[in-house]
Image (cartoon, rainbow, N blue to C red):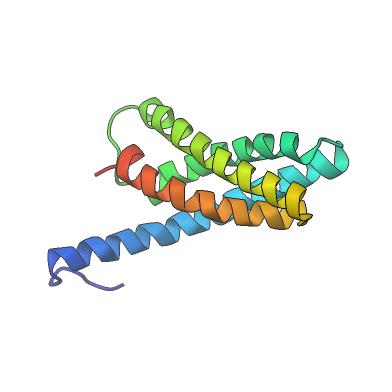
Length: 141
């Protein structure tokens, strides 16, 4: 374990942010696996069109990632009731859902890209949005 006690405060903030971002990426990988798996099942097994299956899959992953971010990524931040953080998290991540869905739909329908690859690209862009806003608003210090 690295001791940052003697580091200047700006360096400690950057170090802490990078540690938190790494946790966010791990949680994001679990959320993405949930998203991809649900999207695949909804589209391939249940025959839902990709533009309909995608928001359902993203919503399921939002539930998983909220819980994991609450208990691990930002376990040391956020005060008050969990419902308050959920009420902030959901609208932010609905923005991420719109970003992911828009990119997925565009790439799949307009370029012929495979829907799972297009979903990966959409999820990556949405992750930047989600981390930035949730770090600054939902689990602010």
